[in-house]
Length: 104
Image 1 (tube, rainbow, N blue to C red):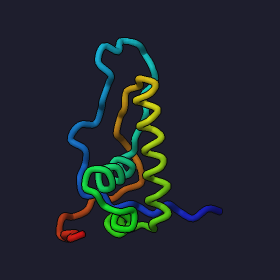
Image 2: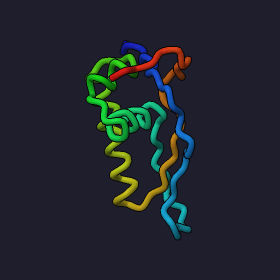
Image 3: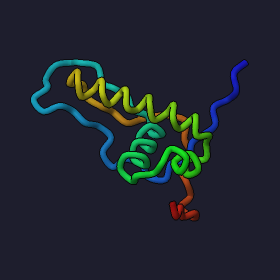
Image 4: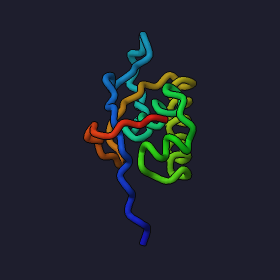
């Protein structure tokens, strides 16, 4: 029996939850980026965190962050290369309470 998934700490929900290529009127499938994948992209690519810092922030193992991040990058590449829309929803996460500040 596999271990249950540990909830990842997320402290910033996306303000925009859907992206669509301009002029796309076809009914192509959307790429679903989970909220925890969004958070890993935000922390590593936008905030400049290392994977180690990101894992501490999200309260999961570094290897878990690496898996989340690689999955997110693959989905973003699929969307950009194939002209697919992106929706951000779902995932195994717990919204932080805002009481802790990360100084890294």
